[in-house]
Length: 79
Image 1 (spheres, rainbow, N blue to C red):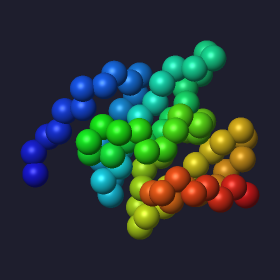
Image 2: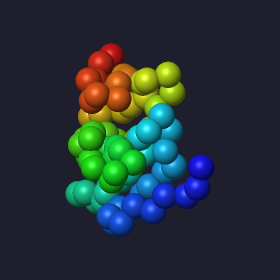
Image 3: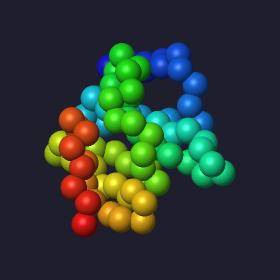
């Protein structure tokens, strides 16, 4: 496995976990996070308040002050 270069500019980018990488953009004085696949396609929109990584098909998320999990298809479950 080598390194992959994503040619889209983000304010934050993490490494790939389970075929997805968390990326972030500056919005309204803060950061919002989403996820891209290995082709660089945004598959989870910039809606989340903290960065996240996937393990066993889910990631912990924070959205609008609520915590929860999201799966790799974008289905979220807030608590």
